[in-house]
Image 1 (tube, helix red, strand yellow):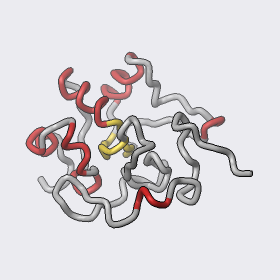
Image 2 (cartoon, rainbow, N blue to C red):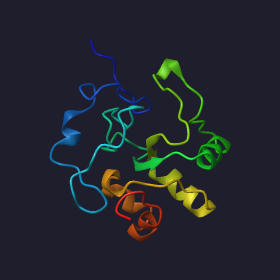
Image 3 (cartoon, one colour):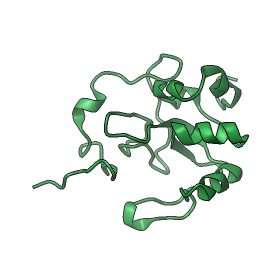
Image 4 (cartoon, rainbow, N blue to C red):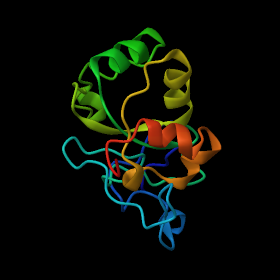
Length: 145
């Protein structure tokens, strides 16, 4: 019998994720098809390289951002150490320059604190607009400048 995901752990493969969640094309903040964020390190709630989301993604991992030392320290201080590898979760640890699907709420916190990392609009899911305006995202965009 397959192991049940209680919503607190991410599925490790796309096949392990609920296939109904990604029916249809997910869109980016510009209304276009969502582009991949990163395959090295492999990111996304579903660990498929994209900032796809669905009902089980309670953290809304939808903002594709380029990590900075300042943001990684900010996140660590808030209890989410993204720099330290966690082999038991298949997590390599992030370093400045890595791209990662961030929780939209954490990106917004960083924005409010003046330490928001750069984002990629073509790779950021439209659900991010529930947390930050398109104008704010554009001010931090690495693409479409």
